[in-house]
Image 1 (cartoon, rainbow, N blue to C red):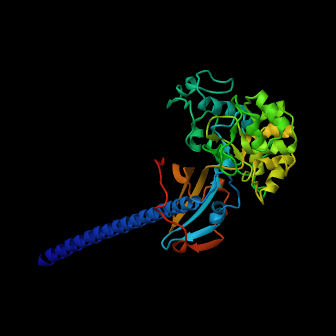
Image 2: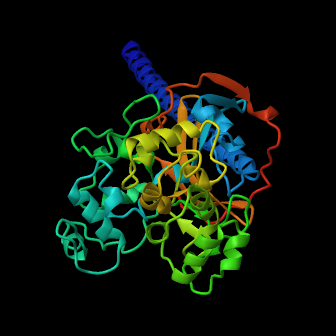
Image 3: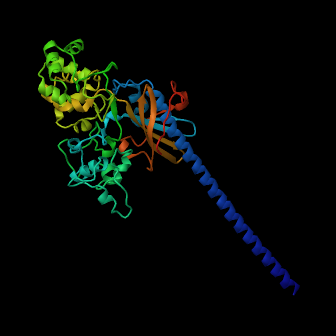
Length: 427
């Protein structure tokens, strides 16, 4: 009887021990899982901190940017090697690229004629225009509140400017695949969107929601406004316009654009060049949506209505040395007055807005973001800030899969995290 009781006690004790061991194993497993989760969170935070370091580095570099003349030879353009350089922070790394927003198509200003030269259907173009423009009557292939309010999860049309590219996905007929993957089903006279090597790119790689240039000459001085009466022949002659042409302009002013100016007043290449450098047709101090002929790819240049392949190719070739004035379209490229009338209102050689692409990594974690930075009163400011939900480097950035060179970020000079001012970044 005692032996049976002792055996029962041993079995009971053994069961208790087994239960305790199981509990300890569970606790240990939970602790390991918790520690792993903590480590993953730390890596994620380090990756996010690294990408923010890239933004700070970009802003410090943009302090030296000349908004009146923005070229591919500028310091900001060389920084990061278009994502090919990995900057080492010790426990994390970052890659980066600064892109002139003027090298892309502004979807908030592009008209129907320019949208028709992108790989978009008529329905997509009409729906975009209806989304951003005021009024309640949709285009024949567009959509207004009457459509969006009838969805399972209804919402209203923006009736204003888009703030991010992702907002395009709210618009009827726009999808993630058509925005973030190369398009093969829609063709235009402008040809496919490609990089310099001929690699097909998605639509998102050439679109922006914010771009613009100041209404100044290459030297930063104010342009002469020809959209108002009272322009004197003397002021035009002082600016370098020949006397006969200055007299015609003063007599026929106001003009609404380079197109009307070059259509109504005949002149030689020197006067065309001078006017391209000194004239404007608005009282505004900034013109949004202009395309920078110093930085735009041939694919983007071909979205300018009436731009020929030959002219676009000549512009890209000149980018190696850079355009120092818009007037070089008339002199260096020797475009005719008729050609200038077609494209001059779309282009610039300067810009005040950039898109910064930043990618941070730590361990197996990574983070990617895009920030829009504008220079106002010589100070870079963050206008918007979007964290991207991608498993790695966004494909539309057109980066190599991995960096080709490394640099110790801690040895970077001319960088300070207190030299710039940010304003209300959108998350």
